[in-house]
Length: 242
Length: 181
Image (cartoon, rainbow over all chains, first blue to last red; front, side):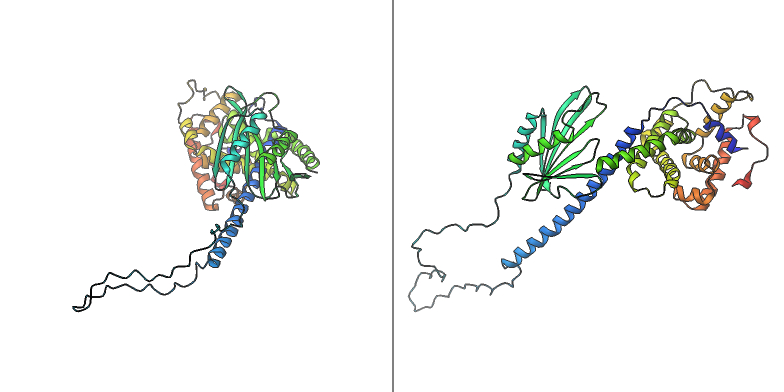
């Protein structure tokens, strides 16, 4: 059996026209590479944040005496048995040192930590900003210190265009082959990817506002809010509201 | 800088794609026996190539890279449950006449039909060995199996193919070429 001839016979079958387009394949490949790179960076950033937060928490716990040995054990109070001749007295109150009445009203301890970030309020603000850019049906999630807002900016039958905003700790821009960085008044801004870019704006407080657009299905015509300039405008608008 | 790099990358990728698209599609067709799935497999391979285009240093190794992606995508794809269910569909209602030795089209269809009866890993081994011309070691490396596995899968695949091609008399010699294994 000449297997080579048989397989070559099959391979020489007349082929129908191909539906593959080089530019689309290349764009899909670059997008895939960018996604993998983002995933790795997000994982490393999360790992670093976990270590940092864990270390800071342990330090704070140690400073507040959390690791100090326990003090002397409280003395157990045992009622004195009544002596037959002794007059009956009421039990003395527990000897507990009481401070003298304060002459001034005590003030609550003032924390030096910055106020906690209100994720829900930020989500509402982001929804409002996205609505100005045509975003509807916004879905807001707050999990693991990350705010994520997904809004629909276009719909045609089963095909849908969504814009995603993520606010999280991270790095806005790292000079590299696939990143275009620029400095804005609100912080460094990076544009990741070319075909369907993601724009990240880093604020001075260390949070990063990432804006990107996704297409689910085959969308005909220009994709709304998908160019770097449009995404940049959304990111800058969000930076002032969140 | 990014735009410049992308432009260069796209040009190089397009040149390679234009030159090798048909070859890759045909290999995929021999693997799966269906042009639509062949396009899907070729697409997966080229997308993977595009994803790593800027990291490829040896341009001579592109063919091997695409071939590896193609074969592994075929094996992974046909291992999925929904694809297996699709493969269990009935045979075409009008099978080609296999006793017409002079009709090349009928021969091709008969061989494609016979290849469908070969399990996917054995079929991948046969394609690597006898269509792509790889040796045992190269096939083993591509499929991430041992050389002994390649040899046994080759023997089993040939046996299955021989049984399936029993009706194509003019294509089947009486003496099997076991030396090739």
